[in-house]
Image 1 (tube, helix red, strand yellow):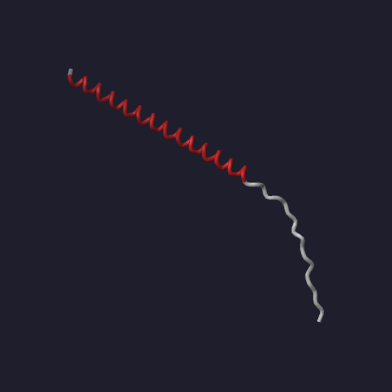
Image 2 (cartoon, rainbow, N blue to C red):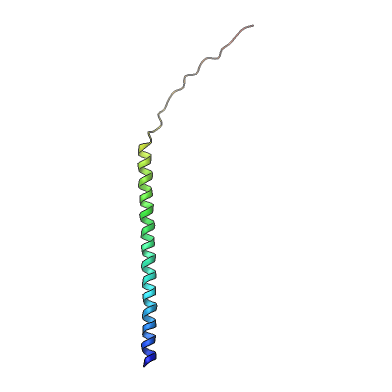
Length: 68
């Protein structure tokens, strides 16, 4: 009878470890998603602060010719 109780307790402890591992894995994956989304928002905010490059025209100076 004692062995039956111990086996039940051991199985229960194994189940608890499995549940805790699964919960920690889920928490870690949610944390990764939150960090990724936060970084994406930071990148978008930085991109909005940088003014777009304007198309500028460069005037070419005519070459100087000298005659000897």
